[in-house]
Image 1 (cartoon, one colour):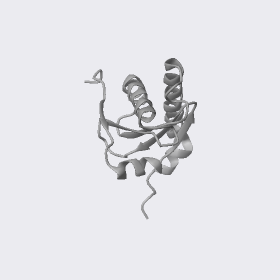
Image 2 (spheres, helix red, strand yellow; image 1 turned 30 degrees about the vertical axis):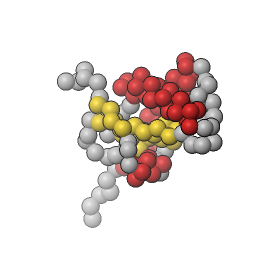
Image 3 (cartoon, helix red, strand yellow; image 1 turned 120 degrees about the vertical axis):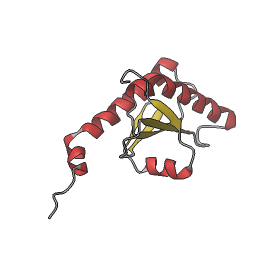
Image 4 (tube, rainbow, N blue to C red; image 1 turned 90 degrees about the vertical axis):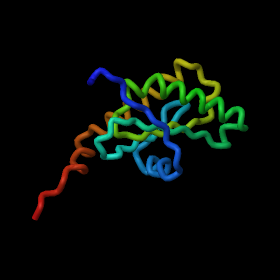
Amino acid sequence: MTGAPPVIERLKRRSEFLAAARAPSCAKGAVVVQARDRADDSPLIRVGFTATRKIGGAVVRNRAKRRLRAAAQALLPQLGRPGHDYVLIARNGTPTRAWPRLLDDVKTALISLAAESDSPSRASQRAPSPSA
């Protein structure tokens, strides 16, 4: 069942968003993406969306979050990693940015975060220490 797309769920609790906020993040263009490795063997990819009042009123924030949801739906099945939580944070340009550029921003951020988690320095931090 390797060809099956990963299951994507939503982050809903504040504690899940706060845990992702402590994880590495990448700001590209009109979006910030935070990625947290849950360190479990779950096949789930979980994703949450945030837009602050700095973006604009409720209508503008909702539009920004709708666009981020559509971008995540398009890109996370290919670029997301099972066992990770992602939070996509809208920036000022999110509601008005051209759709291909917004997709490119999210894609670039996801690739950068994946490369960062694969770097040798991060892998050595996760390695178990030898028992004494």
